[in-house]
Image (cartoon, rainbow, N blue to C red; front, side, top):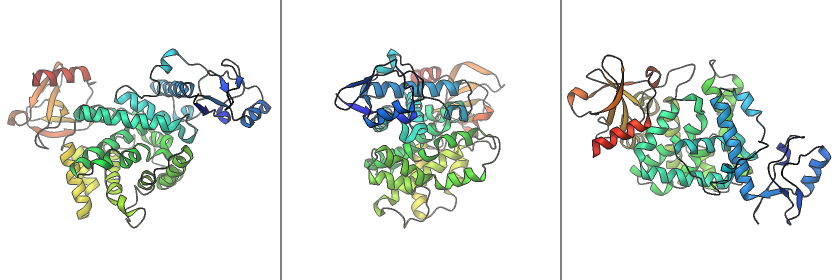
Length: 402
């Protein structure tokens, strides 16, 4: 039977255990429903190298991810989330997905957020990270436009938690840009994995910074500067041994390219630009989000010839108005971009607010190559007071293609 080490140090005395506890030789140490009642008992479990089955470990991790998601939906502050204990109960659905990571982009966001929050304390983290990577690449290959739409929409919803959305979107931007640069192998390997975990050293603080109404404190500024090193330390503790992935994470903020492994220079450049691009498109309490065009200009301002080529490829891969972002048309309507077009400045859009400022009940597909429906200007997500329905977007896209 496959066993996973029990996180004995994280268990609160008196709380019941939702899983059986085993020794590596198969001896049962505690039955589910029992509790650790003393420090002496905790030390005994350490001495016996207490374990749990791999299926129990995955289910417990899933229950923790569900708990974090519930706390966020209830508006709990980050301090309360940081104090959240491992759940004392599991439900049947916690076991359904087994070793495979299933679901859509928001399911992946929930799983990844739990792993980033817990770091080296996560239960059986590497298989979950591998499953998240595999499922993300599968979804990306199936429909890149829907992928961008969902993640850019999630980026504007701070209640979902910022750190995991930023990581997934950065990874996707890297993958799509790498394809344009003929770096497809890197997109599905070390670079993609590095993007998912580059900020694990400050994941909780990253969410806190996204929600706080004051400027970063000096301690937070120090953490932002030092988080690449901390991220690598945590990843090594988790068992990550891919030296290319660790190298890209360690130097993803560094402009001086003499550091790190020479063959990863292009991957580090790409991740640094994707990281900055996504960050500038995310709103903060202290500032509005930039438009995609504004973010691109800000990130690529003063670019070297090498980074300029990456910026050009990124603009080609995403378009000037990526799916999930908003625009105003020349006829006065406000629309959400639903897919990239043949030209970077002519995406596919559906109108969600009419020229009079009223929401429309049925989304209207608009052809932006038509001068009447051409894009006048991008719009910040904060200015859109309508909740966009993915179902209506999919219906409008389908009706247009049928």
